[in-house]
Picture 1 (cartoon, rainbow, N blue to C red):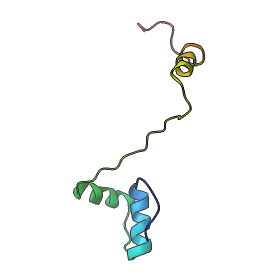
Picture 2: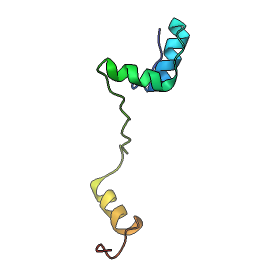
Picture 3: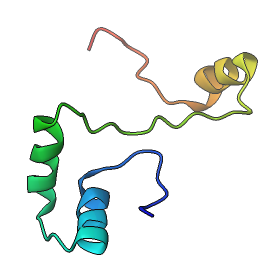
Length: 72
């Protein structure tokens, strides 16, 4: 029963309510209801599991483009 999701957003809530309960809502209305019920919509944070501290530092020094002059 339901949808297999770790985190639900407005689109998923609308899809669930329409499939299971036959209730049709707009995404924005579902988002408002979620907040009124005391829940919050949260976005997943993507992390690279194989990243190492040394690799991140090397990336920042060599690959990542940053402005040379920080005062501008």
